[in-house]
Length: 90
View 1 (cartoon, rainbow, N blue to C red):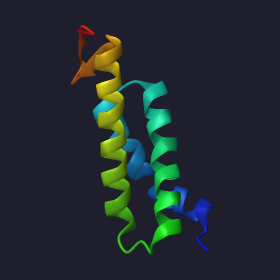
View 2: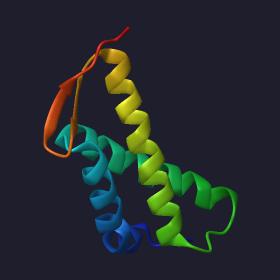
View 3: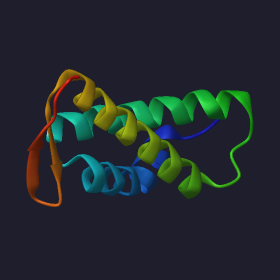
View 4: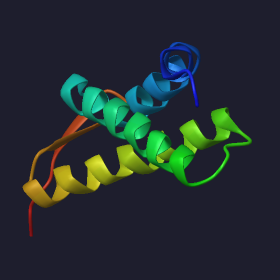
């Protein structure tokens, strides 16, 4: 059994920084944060986790990239390094 409140407290900043660096939109960052911990919880149910920081960095990155792809499909704006670009859904 894992102490998830401790895990979130310890690794939350890693997940937040990773999501923030890639997404830069608070709603998407919050969703990515939650998705990351949900995926980690599911993964921990299947097998022992040997490298928690590595798992969280990988999951946060892949979840953030999924959000960026969704933005592109929806034609939403993508913020990259302070520059806002509108994407076309087509």
